[in-house]
Image 1: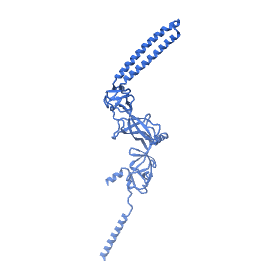
Image 2: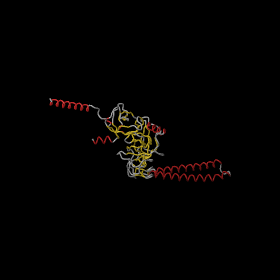
Image 3: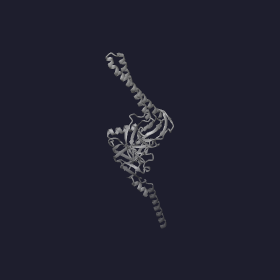
Image 4: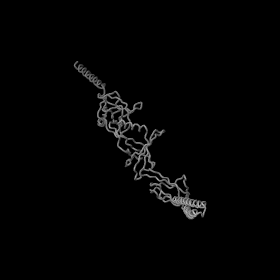
Length: 383
Protein backbone atom coordinates (compact mmCIF):
# COMPACT_ATOMS: atom_id res chain seq x y z
CA UNK A 1 0.00 0.00 0.00
CA UNK A 2 2.88 2.33 0.82
CA UNK A 3 4.41 1.61 -2.60
CA UNK A 4 1.11 2.27 -4.34
CA UNK A 5 0.68 5.56 -2.48
CA UNK A 6 4.19 6.66 -3.43
CA UNK A 7 3.58 5.81 -7.09
CA UNK A 8 0.32 7.77 -7.13
CA UNK A 9 2.00 10.86 -5.70
CA UNK A 10 4.76 10.64 -8.31
CA UNK A 11 2.24 10.38 -11.13
CA UNK A 12 0.31 13.35 -9.73
CA UNK A 13 3.49 15.47 -9.50
CA UNK A 14 4.40 14.55 -13.09
CA UNK A 15 0.94 15.47 -14.34
CA UNK A 16 1.05 18.79 -12.45
CA UNK A 17 4.48 19.61 -13.97
CA UNK A 18 3.17 18.79 -17.41
CA UNK A 19 0.19 21.07 -16.91
CA UNK A 20 2.39 23.91 -15.69
CA UNK A 21 4.70 23.47 -18.67
CA UNK A 22 1.78 23.54 -21.09
CA UNK A 23 0.45 26.68 -19.47
CA UNK A 24 3.82 28.34 -19.83
CA UNK A 25 4.14 27.37 -23.48
CA UNK A 26 0.66 28.67 -24.30
CA UNK A 27 1.32 32.19 -22.85
CA UNK A 28 1.74 35.40 -25.00
CA UNK A 29 5.09 35.70 -26.82
CA UNK A 30 7.44 38.54 -25.85
CA UNK A 31 7.13 41.85 -27.84
CA UNK A 32 9.65 41.99 -30.73
CA UNK A 33 12.41 44.55 -30.58
CA UNK A 34 12.53 47.21 -33.31
CA UNK A 35 15.02 50.00 -33.91
CA UNK A 36 13.56 53.50 -33.89
CA UNK A 37 14.75 57.05 -34.36
CA UNK A 38 13.14 60.17 -32.91
CA UNK A 39 12.48 62.81 -35.53
CA UNK A 40 13.87 66.30 -34.99
CA UNK A 41 14.00 69.35 -37.23
CA UNK A 42 17.34 70.17 -38.79
CA UNK A 43 18.89 72.37 -41.44
CA UNK A 44 18.86 70.69 -44.86
CA UNK A 45 20.67 71.87 -47.97
CA UNK A 46 18.32 71.21 -50.87
CA UNK A 47 19.58 70.39 -54.33
CA UNK A 48 18.36 68.73 -57.49
CA UNK A 49 20.19 66.70 -60.11
CA UNK A 50 19.12 67.22 -63.71
CA UNK A 51 20.29 65.53 -66.92
CA UNK A 52 21.78 67.69 -69.63
CA UNK A 53 24.28 68.00 -72.45
CA UNK A 54 27.24 70.22 -73.08
CA UNK A 55 27.28 72.71 -75.93
CA UNK A 56 29.99 75.00 -77.28
CA UNK A 57 30.19 78.56 -76.02
CA UNK A 58 30.44 79.83 -79.60
CA UNK A 59 30.36 78.06 -82.97
CA UNK A 60 31.57 79.47 -86.29
CA UNK A 61 31.07 77.74 -89.63
CA UNK A 62 33.79 78.47 -92.15
CA UNK A 63 32.33 79.14 -95.62
CA UNK A 64 33.82 80.67 -98.80
CA UNK A 65 32.90 84.24 -99.71
CA UNK A 66 34.29 84.09 -103.26
CA UNK A 67 34.38 81.47 -106.00
CA UNK A 68 37.55 79.59 -106.78
CA UNK A 69 39.78 76.56 -106.39
CA UNK A 70 41.22 75.63 -102.99
CA UNK A 71 45.01 75.80 -103.32
CA UNK A 72 46.12 75.05 -99.73
CA UNK A 73 44.78 74.07 -96.32
CA UNK A 74 46.69 76.01 -93.67
CA UNK A 75 45.61 74.36 -90.41
CA UNK A 76 45.85 71.03 -88.59
CA UNK A 77 42.55 69.29 -88.01
CA UNK A 78 41.54 69.26 -84.34
CA UNK A 79 44.02 71.99 -83.39
CA UNK A 80 43.42 75.27 -81.60
CA UNK A 81 43.25 78.25 -83.96
CA UNK A 82 43.45 81.99 -83.30
CA UNK A 83 40.94 84.54 -84.44
CA UNK A 84 42.10 85.83 -87.85
CA UNK A 85 44.40 82.87 -88.53
CA UNK A 86 44.43 81.82 -92.25
CA UNK A 87 42.69 78.49 -92.78
CA UNK A 88 42.36 78.04 -96.57
CA UNK A 89 43.84 79.74 -99.60
CA UNK A 90 41.75 80.09 -102.77
CA UNK A 91 43.56 80.67 -106.08
CA UNK A 92 44.01 84.48 -106.05
CA UNK A 93 45.05 85.01 -109.70
CA UNK A 94 41.59 86.03 -111.05
CA UNK A 95 41.08 88.44 -108.19
CA UNK A 96 44.53 89.94 -108.54
CA UNK A 97 43.69 90.65 -112.18
CA UNK A 98 40.38 92.20 -111.10
CA UNK A 99 42.25 94.51 -108.72
CA UNK A 100 44.56 95.63 -111.53
CA UNK A 101 41.58 96.31 -113.81
CA UNK A 102 39.94 98.35 -111.08
CA UNK A 103 43.13 100.30 -110.52
CA UNK A 104 43.36 101.08 -114.23
CA UNK A 105 39.71 102.13 -114.35
CA UNK A 106 40.29 104.45 -111.41
CA UNK A 107 43.33 106.00 -113.10
CA UNK A 108 41.30 106.59 -116.29
CA UNK A 109 38.44 108.15 -114.32
CA UNK A 110 40.84 110.41 -112.44
CA UNK A 111 42.42 111.54 -115.74
CA UNK A 112 39.01 112.37 -117.22
CA UNK A 113 38.11 114.24 -114.06
CA UNK A 114 41.29 116.30 -114.33
CA UNK A 115 40.39 117.32 -117.91
CA UNK A 116 36.80 118.15 -116.94
CA UNK A 117 37.95 120.22 -113.95
CA UNK A 118 40.42 122.21 -116.05
CA UNK A 119 37.74 122.87 -118.68
CA UNK A 120 35.30 124.04 -116.03
CA UNK A 121 37.87 126.34 -114.45
CA UNK A 122 38.69 127.83 -117.87
CA UNK A 123 35.06 128.40 -118.91
CA UNK A 124 33.94 130.19 -115.76
CA UNK A 125 35.84 133.51 -116.27
CA UNK A 126 35.17 133.39 -120.02
CA UNK A 127 31.44 133.09 -119.42
CA UNK A 128 31.54 136.10 -117.09
CA UNK A 129 33.13 138.18 -119.92
CA UNK A 130 30.65 136.80 -122.44
CA UNK A 131 33.24 134.98 -124.51
CA UNK A 132 31.48 131.59 -124.06
CA UNK A 133 27.83 130.96 -123.64
CA UNK A 134 26.19 130.15 -120.35
CA UNK A 135 25.20 126.76 -121.74
CA UNK A 136 28.81 125.85 -122.55
CA UNK A 137 29.85 126.79 -119.02
CA UNK A 138 27.02 124.70 -117.54
CA UNK A 139 28.09 121.75 -119.66
CA UNK A 140 31.66 122.10 -118.39
CA UNK A 141 30.46 122.14 -114.75
CA UNK A 142 28.29 119.07 -115.38
CA UNK A 143 31.24 117.28 -116.99
CA UNK A 144 33.35 117.99 -113.91
CA UNK A 145 30.63 116.65 -111.58
CA UNK A 146 30.21 113.55 -113.75
CA UNK A 147 33.96 113.01 -113.63
CA UNK A 148 33.93 113.20 -109.83
CA UNK A 149 31.12 110.60 -109.70
CA UNK A 150 33.02 108.33 -112.07
CA UNK A 151 36.09 108.53 -109.85
CA UNK A 152 33.98 107.61 -106.80
CA UNK A 153 32.54 104.59 -108.63
CA UNK A 154 36.01 103.49 -109.75
CA UNK A 155 37.33 103.75 -106.20
CA UNK A 156 34.42 101.68 -104.87
CA UNK A 157 35.06 99.06 -107.56
CA UNK A 158 38.72 98.95 -106.59
CA UNK A 159 37.82 98.56 -102.91
CA UNK A 160 35.41 95.72 -103.77
CA UNK A 161 38.06 94.00 -105.86
CA UNK A 162 40.57 94.25 -103.01
CA UNK A 163 38.00 92.82 -100.57
CA UNK A 164 37.39 89.87 -102.89
CA UNK A 165 41.15 89.37 -103.15
CA UNK A 166 41.36 89.33 -99.34
CA UNK A 167 38.63 86.71 -99.23
CA UNK A 168 40.86 84.32 -101.14
CA UNK A 169 42.41 83.67 -97.74
CA UNK A 170 39.72 82.23 -95.47
CA UNK A 171 40.49 83.27 -91.88
CA UNK A 172 39.16 82.02 -88.56
CA UNK A 173 36.34 84.30 -87.36
CA UNK A 174 36.78 83.21 -83.71
CA UNK A 175 39.38 81.47 -81.59
CA UNK A 176 38.72 77.86 -80.67
CA UNK A 177 39.19 74.26 -81.72
CA UNK A 178 38.69 73.51 -85.40
CA UNK A 179 37.23 70.21 -86.56
CA UNK A 180 38.01 68.16 -89.63
CA UNK A 181 38.22 69.75 -93.04
CA UNK A 182 35.35 68.89 -95.36
CA UNK A 183 37.23 69.88 -98.54
CA UNK A 184 40.69 69.16 -99.91
CA UNK A 185 43.10 71.00 -102.16
CA UNK A 186 41.76 71.30 -105.69
CA UNK A 187 38.11 71.48 -104.66
CA UNK A 188 35.92 74.09 -106.35
CA UNK A 189 34.05 76.27 -103.88
CA UNK A 190 31.43 78.92 -104.51
CA UNK A 191 30.33 82.03 -102.71
CA UNK A 192 27.53 81.47 -100.17
CA UNK A 193 27.40 77.74 -100.82
CA UNK A 194 25.41 75.53 -98.43
CA UNK A 195 28.31 73.16 -97.74
CA UNK A 196 30.64 74.45 -95.05
CA UNK A 197 34.39 73.90 -95.12
CA UNK A 198 35.07 73.44 -91.40
CA UNK A 199 33.64 74.28 -87.97
CA UNK A 200 35.32 76.14 -85.11
CA UNK A 201 34.03 75.65 -81.56
CA UNK A 202 34.99 77.78 -78.60
CA UNK A 203 35.21 75.35 -75.67
CA UNK A 204 36.43 77.56 -72.84
CA UNK A 205 34.09 78.38 -71.24
CA UNK A 206 31.45 75.82 -72.19
CA UNK A 207 27.68 75.65 -71.72
CA UNK A 208 25.64 72.90 -70.08
CA UNK A 209 21.95 72.89 -71.04
CA UNK A 210 19.55 71.11 -68.67
CA UNK A 211 15.77 71.03 -68.29
CA UNK A 212 13.66 71.37 -65.17
CA UNK A 213 9.92 70.92 -64.84
CA UNK A 214 7.92 74.10 -64.52
CA UNK A 215 6.13 72.69 -61.46
CA UNK A 216 9.44 72.36 -59.61
CA UNK A 217 10.28 75.97 -60.43
CA UNK A 218 6.89 77.15 -59.18
CA UNK A 219 7.21 75.19 -55.94
CA UNK A 220 10.67 76.56 -55.31
CA UNK A 221 9.50 80.13 -55.82
CA UNK A 222 6.53 79.64 -53.49
CA UNK A 223 8.72 78.19 -50.74
CA UNK A 224 11.16 81.08 -51.05
CA UNK A 225 8.39 83.68 -50.96
CA UNK A 226 6.73 82.03 -47.94
CA UNK A 227 10.01 81.91 -46.05
CA UNK A 228 10.09 78.12 -45.83
CA UNK A 229 13.34 78.16 -47.77
CA UNK A 230 16.23 80.53 -47.48
CA UNK A 231 18.35 81.41 -50.47
CA UNK A 232 21.60 79.55 -50.74
CA UNK A 233 23.41 82.78 -51.55
CA UNK A 234 23.38 85.96 -53.59
CA UNK A 235 24.29 86.31 -57.22
CA UNK A 236 24.31 83.43 -59.67
CA UNK A 237 23.45 79.99 -58.36
CA UNK A 238 26.33 77.52 -58.16
CA UNK A 239 26.12 74.34 -60.23
CA UNK A 240 28.21 71.18 -59.84
CA UNK A 241 28.66 68.68 -62.63
CA UNK A 242 28.69 64.88 -62.61
CA UNK A 243 30.30 63.32 -65.69
CA UNK A 244 29.30 60.21 -67.63
CA UNK A 245 31.68 57.98 -65.68
CA UNK A 246 30.25 59.13 -62.34
CA UNK A 247 33.15 61.41 -61.44
CA UNK A 248 32.59 64.99 -60.35
CA UNK A 249 33.92 67.82 -62.51
CA UNK A 250 36.54 69.64 -60.39
CA UNK A 251 35.29 73.18 -61.07
CA UNK A 252 31.85 74.51 -60.27
CA UNK A 253 29.85 76.52 -62.79
CA UNK A 254 27.17 79.19 -62.53
CA UNK A 255 23.57 79.22 -63.66
CA UNK A 256 23.13 81.80 -66.42
CA UNK A 257 19.44 81.91 -67.35
CA UNK A 258 16.22 79.99 -67.88
CA UNK A 259 13.92 80.20 -70.86
CA UNK A 260 10.99 82.59 -70.55
CA UNK A 261 8.56 80.05 -72.01
CA UNK A 262 7.58 76.52 -71.03
CA UNK A 263 7.83 73.73 -73.59
CA UNK A 264 4.24 72.69 -74.27
CA UNK A 265 5.20 69.12 -75.10
CA UNK A 266 7.28 68.37 -71.99
CA UNK A 267 6.22 71.05 -69.50
CA UNK A 268 9.86 71.87 -68.82
CA UNK A 269 12.06 74.96 -68.83
CA UNK A 270 15.57 75.11 -70.26
CA UNK A 271 18.34 76.10 -67.85
CA UNK A 272 21.82 77.03 -69.04
CA UNK A 273 24.94 76.86 -66.89
CA UNK A 274 28.43 78.05 -67.76
CA UNK A 275 31.56 76.13 -66.76
CA UNK A 276 35.25 76.96 -67.19
CA UNK A 277 36.94 74.37 -69.39
CA UNK A 278 40.65 75.21 -69.64
CA UNK A 279 41.71 71.58 -70.06
CA UNK A 280 39.07 70.90 -72.74
CA UNK A 281 37.79 67.98 -70.63
CA UNK A 282 34.22 68.83 -71.60
CA UNK A 283 33.38 68.43 -75.28
CA UNK A 284 30.15 69.46 -77.02
CA UNK A 285 27.45 66.80 -76.94
CA UNK A 286 28.57 65.01 -73.75
CA UNK A 287 25.82 63.69 -71.46
CA UNK A 288 26.22 65.06 -67.93
CA UNK A 289 24.17 65.60 -64.78
CA UNK A 290 24.03 69.05 -63.24
CA UNK A 291 23.52 69.36 -59.49
CA UNK A 292 21.83 72.66 -58.65
CA UNK A 293 21.70 74.08 -55.13
CA UNK A 294 18.06 75.11 -54.60
CA UNK A 295 18.15 76.55 -51.11
CA UNK A 296 18.25 75.82 -47.39
CA UNK A 297 15.35 74.51 -45.29
CA UNK A 298 15.99 75.39 -41.61
CA UNK A 299 13.09 73.24 -40.28
CA UNK A 300 13.46 70.06 -42.31
CA UNK A 301 12.18 66.67 -41.18
CA UNK A 302 14.32 63.94 -42.72
CA UNK A 303 13.23 60.29 -42.64
CA UNK A 304 15.68 57.58 -43.75
CA UNK A 305 14.68 56.04 -47.04
CA UNK A 306 14.91 52.57 -45.49
CA UNK A 307 12.01 53.46 -43.16
CA UNK A 308 9.62 54.41 -45.99
CA UNK A 309 7.43 51.77 -47.65
CA UNK A 310 4.37 51.85 -49.93
CA UNK A 311 0.82 50.80 -49.15
CA UNK A 312 -1.60 49.13 -51.52
CA UNK A 313 -2.51 52.49 -53.06
CA UNK A 314 1.13 53.33 -53.73
CA UNK A 315 1.28 56.00 -51.02
CA UNK A 316 4.48 56.38 -48.97
CA UNK A 317 4.03 55.22 -45.38
CA UNK A 318 6.07 54.90 -42.17
CA UNK A 319 5.47 52.92 -38.97
CA UNK A 320 5.41 54.93 -35.71
CA UNK A 321 5.67 53.70 -32.12
CA UNK A 322 3.78 55.55 -29.35
CA UNK A 323 4.65 55.77 -25.65
CA UNK A 324 2.90 52.44 -24.90
CA UNK A 325 4.88 50.64 -27.61
CA UNK A 326 1.93 50.36 -30.00
CA UNK A 327 2.63 50.53 -33.74
CA UNK A 328 0.64 52.83 -36.03
CA UNK A 329 0.87 53.41 -39.77
CA UNK A 330 1.08 56.93 -41.17
CA UNK A 331 0.85 58.15 -44.77
CA UNK A 332 3.47 60.81 -45.39
CA UNK A 333 4.25 63.36 -48.07
CA UNK A 334 7.84 62.99 -49.24
CA UNK A 335 8.80 65.92 -51.47
CA UNK A 336 12.36 65.10 -52.44
CA UNK A 337 15.39 63.02 -51.57
CA UNK A 338 18.13 64.63 -49.49
CA UNK A 339 21.09 62.28 -49.47
CA UNK A 340 19.83 58.88 -48.21
CA UNK A 341 16.71 60.38 -46.58
CA UNK A 342 13.36 61.78 -47.66
CA UNK A 343 12.32 65.35 -46.91
CA UNK A 344 8.87 64.87 -45.34
CA UNK A 345 6.43 67.79 -45.28
CA UNK A 346 3.29 66.09 -43.93
CA UNK A 347 2.25 62.99 -41.96
CA UNK A 348 4.82 63.10 -39.15
CA UNK A 349 6.09 65.69 -36.69
CA UNK A 350 9.15 66.34 -34.58
CA UNK A 351 9.26 63.94 -31.63
CA UNK A 352 7.65 61.01 -33.45
CA UNK A 353 9.45 57.68 -33.16
CA UNK A 354 9.86 56.04 -36.57
CA UNK A 355 10.77 52.36 -37.01
CA UNK A 356 13.86 52.02 -39.19
CA UNK A 357 15.01 48.50 -38.19
CA UNK A 358 12.90 45.37 -37.82
CA UNK A 359 10.11 46.57 -40.11
CA UNK A 360 9.34 42.97 -41.08
CA UNK A 361 8.49 42.20 -37.45
CA UNK A 362 6.11 45.13 -36.92
CA UNK A 363 2.47 45.58 -37.98
CA UNK A 364 0.00 48.34 -37.28
CA UNK A 365 -1.79 47.75 -33.95
CA UNK A 366 0.75 45.36 -32.41
CA UNK A 367 2.97 45.99 -29.39
CA UNK A 368 6.73 46.20 -29.85
CA UNK A 369 9.76 46.93 -27.74
CA UNK A 370 11.40 50.06 -29.20
CA UNK A 371 15.15 50.45 -28.85
CA UNK A 372 17.44 53.10 -30.36
CA UNK A 373 18.29 52.30 -33.96
CA UNK A 374 21.49 50.31 -34.15
CA UNK A 375 20.93 48.52 -30.83
CA UNK A 376 18.40 46.13 -32.35
CA UNK A 377 20.75 45.29 -35.17
CA UNK A 378 23.60 44.73 -32.71
CA UNK A 379 21.42 42.43 -30.57
CA UNK A 380 20.38 40.37 -33.60
CA UNK A 381 24.00 40.05 -34.69
CA UNK A 382 25.04 39.02 -31.17
CA UNK A 383 22.23 36.42 -30.97
